[in-house]
Length: 466
Image (tube, rainbow, N blue to C red):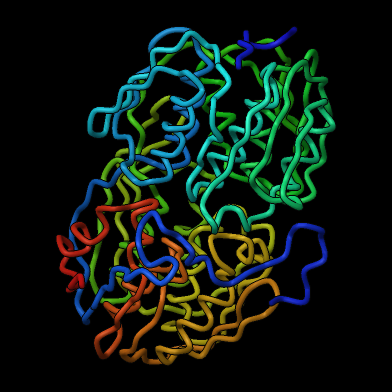
């Protein structure tokens, strides 16, 4: 077969697409507490000024991809500044269960791979990580054995037809729970396809490109909107040839990445919380060695549009990824508009933009973000309900928000809905509110950034854990 060698072994009415029904509550997680009636972690946040210089954990999106490409390569790959959140740990665990030797020491991972996988005797557990499940599905589709992959209750509610359909077109056989995990994937020899993306999703694009390595011929993905391009950059940096033209990405099957060493740049999506806090509280925040990939800097451009000061210095490149020291400073904010074409470049930061808009002069519009309804929770509804509870003037619409500001925020008790990004956004809201904000279910932050409390305090934040 062509491709890298393998081893056999062993309540929102507007939802229309089958298997893509939005949901709100993603709290059923036994792994971190707060699930099934178990007590969870509460954060109590008081007003403060966020200011300082930080060096943040490595970019989560890059870390996932580095682990996976390292497993396909033959030889030793070393990844430094690996983020310690649960999502990346899920990827490492799944790869180990497929027989890939991975040694984790603090924030370093060594992947000493033969480029082969072996069927797991039990289902792979992707935890809460949609990236893990969707990208690994592309690799599993090319293996000559059957594997099941599942995740926690939240992940099992998220739509998976978006990866099932193209992989089945390529020849994989996939059983699912009504278009959701768990997935049972019977892989083997794949045929190439030209796939026009019905949704803008870097995860789906990456899944197909990874599967394309195992296909006999040329596989192409055509994007409706540009999405983050970490996979393409890492492919190119490790010797996989791609052709990008007219919104399509094409590769020939049978290619294999070479092993590599990389230090993951700081995660811009993590830095965004502290940038927003500095802007809202009258401070200035510098994130050192931060990734500034153009497909991820939509949030910085939005901050500039709103009137914040943004300064990028010491630009350099690490394994095809642009990196810089980024400083964001407070200023008076004006309303902004996020267009649908911009959404894929700042999707994770939209809850923060909604918070910033509550303190900006005028009416802000964020549209084209319906994908947020299919994250760890229905983020559109959860953000709207939570910020409204704290005094914001925010209107939920089907695909985003209309926010009128400025509206002073007051104290209160809100919940994370089991969503890591919502938990941290609400902590930032607490720093600018006039009274104490209590966030229930704050343990969700450990999915991506278990050091959040420490860094928040180091920058002047006042946060107590209960």
